[in-house]
Amino acid sequence: MKTDVLIIGAGPTGLALALSLKEAGIDCIVVERRLDIENTSRAAVIHAHTLDVLDELGVAQPLVEKGLKLTRFCMRDRGQKLLQLNFDKLPTEHPFLLMIPQDCTERILLEALLNAGGMVRWGATVEAIEQTPEGVTARIASSQGVNVIQARYTIGADGMHSLVRQTAGIGFAGGTYEESFILADVDMDWPLGQSEVSLFLSPEGMVVVAPLPEENRYRIVAAVDTAPEHPQLADIQALLDSRGPEYGTKVRSVIWSSRFRVHHRLAERYSKGRLFLMGDAAHVHSPAGGQGMNTGLVDACLLGRMLADVLSGRCDERYLDCYELKRKPAAEEVLRIAGRLMGMATMQNAVKRRARNIVLRILNRLPSLKRKLEMNLSGLSRKYAAKI
Ligand SMILES: Cc1cc2nc3c(=O)[nH]c(=O)nc-3n(C[C@H](O)[C@H](O)[C@H](O)COP(=O)(O)OP(=O)(O)OC[C@H]3O[C@@H](n4cnc5c(N)ncnc54)[C@H](O)[C@@H]3O)c2cc1C
Image 1 (cartoon, rainbow, N blue to C red):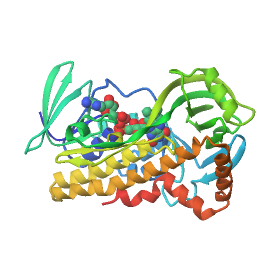
Image 2 (cartoon, rainbow, N blue to C red):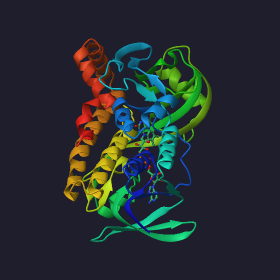
Image 3 (cartoon, helix red, strand yellow):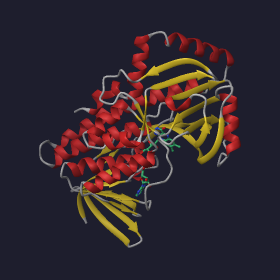
Image 4 (cartoon, rainbow, N blue to C red):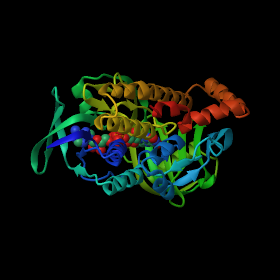
């Protein structure tokens, strides 16, 4: 089998890249070892700049229709507000945070890809990749046996443990945070209602509460010393009672829960020869600020446009060097923001925590600094990195 672009991985970034290429009339194949879209929600927010970029692929509108639009992000010490950011005055077509579970986002991207004439080869695992002077050869195993695909370019949209990155011998420097994390989607009575994303910075540790589109449904993310494998209703209730508002919270049911570790790593290079990296294969960091999937989706849209320009003969192959020049600095900035938020949220020392709260209260009265934070979190400050 031959194709112009082989995309390994049908997570959000692989799907977005395939859609971008299909829309431009470029031949591509997507292979995915899973049998279907994973039924867990993971990333729960899409930021303004990502929606602006996805608009070009015609998927911003269906995402907005399925999601919940919020305009407020608050940092709180238990019930007290420390800092409030507002997204409704930002210079964008989408001045809000869009709350939508990752599996819904992936389904919308997949549907658009199928409508554009594309498809995903589910249950197909890439076992080995080799670069030749003409392109890349990949060995793929599925229930039908082993196939070989030859492609002019191969893209690693294959997540944190990327085979493409390993095959290319690209380093992935960084580390792993000591804390483990609890992640849960719950139905609950919540005193703050479904109008803001709240980050609580209590002495017990941090917890994020983010409303999801279903009525009374919320995403909970909390850093703890040791997380249970499957956090139960009582664990989540205890977390919110000790870190959230003093009263008024009643967890009714846990829809889904999990624990995970957080890494912060960045690929040394974004390509080697005809192998390219994007999404989690190129950068991973803490979910504070909800930037991971967003950064990957913008990688995918830019790389899609550049590959289409090269494969259709409009640009020389050297043009693809701009991909790393644009997207690596953007990921570096995101890693810095997520690292700072994480450091601030998991501060242990009582004196430092008090100082942090004072600084946040002062910041809350400085509109120009607040605006800078809003531009950073919405991704709009990195607009330059999505243009060629
Ligand atoms: C618990 C958790 C919470 C998160 N919360 C947020 C959040 O709030 N906001 C945010 O923006 N991000 C969040 N993220 C990060 C977000 O989920 C990722 O950034 C996003 O999924 C990355 O997309 P991707 O397409 O790059 O990779 P992935 O989603 O990891 O997809 C990679 C795909 O490649 C496939 N694959 C891998 N190797 C092969 C192979 N050899 N052959 C075939 N297929 C292969 C895998 O099966 C997988 O489906 C969270 C992640 C986790 C784990």
